[in-house]
Image 1: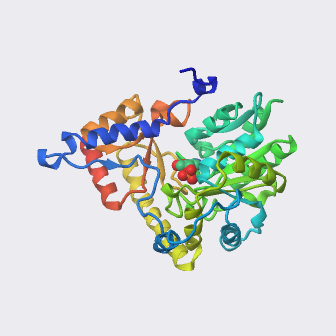
Image 2: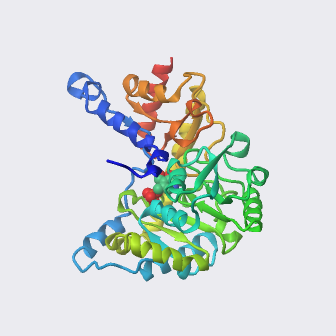
Length: 392
Ligand SMILES: Cc1ncc(COP(=O)(O)O)c(C=O)c1O
């Protein structure tokens, strides 16, 4: 079958490939208790182990009893209003519900934003490492992602001078994430402000993925880029803080002029996000749900405080402690020259699944691995014990 040429530029999502390899080992003798095996500890997954808030689970059961018609392409008005109130309460920001577009996860939000803003001949700057799908959203819009190498000194984020130096007449904007996947590190507020000002001055657009922002552990970094102006495109999601990965619900906050374009695209591409998910998600803004999410955030912070020093002790060095999300980005070069091979060896020798750096960028990926501390403390402690054995 003849495939469209754009497919040549879209690689597999290797995070998922590693997950498949982990599942194969988990189904085999090494993980079979009857044969003296032990269970696989999955620290490769990008999702918390908590699930949706109790009120959201109750709401979905209730809502499913009644009619669940299509909503507006931009989403359920009550949910857009609830999100607007959340921005006011949580971040002290006035974000009009009219600028909020509900999407089928941050993934659909990123896709819609890229389709609306970028086209053939355009370049989009992004940090290396970054979320692997970002470059493919840009590619799927026929534009060109340009990954700029970053290091620990910049918290693995773009620098303002770096963006200035890299900008060409073809550059249309920057695609950032703060806190970032895979590093859990945020862009410094002043750097972000400088980048946004420069990009605006060049007539470009700043798109920033803030899906991990509610899972910030550091006052200094925990601010939304939306404070920088109405021209920022912010991507958000119910997947992480709200614990609703499989529900496929997220949102965009858009410059007012972009709203009709996104609406038109969404109407045609998928009509609306899941009505069931949208109706139930409203319960995620009840005070009891928010209190639950905040408890979870504290739990994740405790896990970070345990796991980062433990990794450093093992020589799996985390050069910048994550200030948000639930990822530690570690340099494994003291123990192995190739993180892809190392990750596969660890499946066999320790039954611990970690994500190799390969997916996240092109600069030195074999040096890096991502550990997700979204798993229970018990699992993290057991994983550290097993890694210690193997490394010793
Ligand atoms: C940085 C980042 N953006 C977007 C996504 C996709 O999120 P969603 O489940 O909302 O589509 C992920 C998922 O892991 C992510 O890490």
